[in-house]
Image 1 (tube, rainbow, N blue to C red):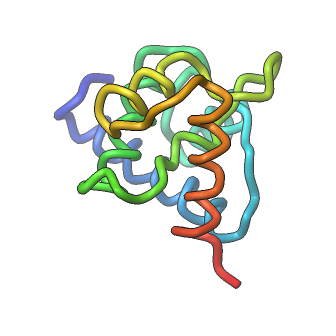
Image 2: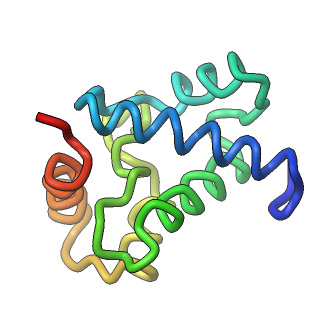
Length: 121
């Protein structure tokens, strides 16, 4: 699956829908494997720890926060072993979203932004 293909765009849209619904319901975090399974249930093969998963998560975060002011939806996707996002999340947070601080600070702030920006009362 490559960026710019209809297959990729369909997977991105499906991922955005899954993450937006979970964000609005406060149903997070979600493990990479769980997200992969939900995407598979919708006909999209995106292995949990793959380049495609990383690209899709980054693109969904960019799509839902084009001005980089809203929360990164990828913040709610975590590694099973660590219970926190992978390295790609922190790289994107710093390099494109301008987030500052150590990993713990960045993730904690992003979780607050998720509640502020997406959680429905």
